[in-house]
Structures are given as structure tokens and as C-alpha cells.
Length: 248
Image 1: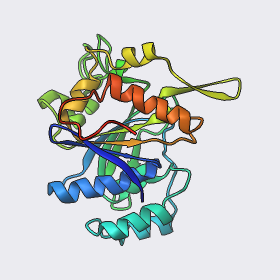
Image 2 (image 1 turned 90 degrees about the vertical axis):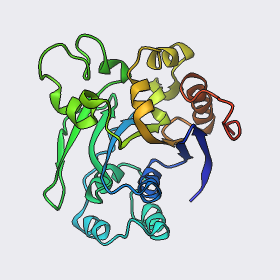
Image 3 (image 1 turned 180 degrees about the horizontal axis):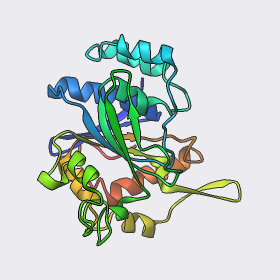
Image 4 (image 1 turned 60 degrees about the vertical axis):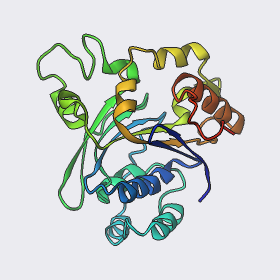
């Protein structure tokens, strides 16, 4: 399993890799190294929902997997999770890595919960982009009483933050299709998504770690993926003096 870099802002690790299913491995790694027993609340930014159902035999393999044995976890991720990178979310819920999840995606939003094999209910919240979180009808700031209380409570916005938030980013979130081609959104879109008043910064501040999937295939090629990574650094993961080295 190839990891391009691990950068740090303060003590916050940022893991960057090619395939989105690799997030499963780094959630295991972080939970082991941080001594965390509880599940994460994951906030994911992705062009796709990645909510493909699991077959019974896959669930059985997850139940038998030792999450503290990172060598075995790596093999499981590489050989057992789908190469289409669309079943790792439910796999992480079955493994107890994810409790609830907020998916920022333009895809259809028809799945609102997942009940795992241990009968644990996982809430699946949806919005289109970070701008939906704030404002008078924002998912975290809505003035209508209790409208989004489940999300507010689950993510911990009502009590100054869930200590186990993970921010997960698929670079294809920043792409769009036109005439059968994939394009990268422009700089103005990045500025808008990561504006100073966006609550994505609250999520960043509370996150224990950040996982980033380059997904060149989903981005329309390696050049698009590389361009998005540079823009993401410029407008979100801004360089600081304690960065180990610049992006590749």
C-alpha cells in the first residue's frame, strides 16, 4: 500500500493515498495509535456516495478481522474491498470504525441509515457541499427548532464538538462532467467552498485526522488529481512553517 505523504498541521495527521478504500486502513491506524475505543463520526466530501451494500461473506470477513493488526487490515483493504472503492463505508460501519456519517455529495441521497449485523443503527446524513452547513437554514445552524437536531447532536455541534471526528476527502468532489469529459472546478469555487465563514473550518478544527483519496480515475486523470491537490493545499490545507515538505 503506497502512501504519498503524511503532513501535519500542529498534531493533526493528514494521510494522502490513491484509492478511497484505503481510508479504512488509516481509520484503523489512527484508532490504534490514538488509543481510541469509540467509533468515528466521519464527514466525507465525495462526488459519489460510496454506499454499495456488502455481501454476507464480506461481513463475516470483517467480523473476523483484527483491527489492531495493521498488516492484516492492509491485506483486507487491498484484496477484499471492492476496486471500485464504493463499499468501504459500510465495511467501516460493520467494523465499528464509523458510528454516523455526513456525506457531502451531489449524488442521490436516498439512504439515511444502515443497521449493521450487530443491530447497531448508523445514521447517514447528506448535504451537497459545506455551504449547506451554515446560514438561517443551515444543517448545523437552522433556526427552525429541532429540524436538524439529530445531526447537530451526533456530530457534537451542540456541545462544542465530537472528539472523534474524521474529515475524509475524495478529490473527485472538486470535479464536474461536461460533454463526456471531467473538469476541475475553478479557483473561485475553491474560494467559495472554503470561505472564512464556512463551518468546514469548524470540522477541520475538531477533526482527529484527515484522510485524502487522490482517485485519479474519478478525477478524469492524474493531472486533474494533481491540480486539485495543489488547490486544496492553497485554499484549505494551507502551508505552515511546521509542514514537513511541500506536496509532490
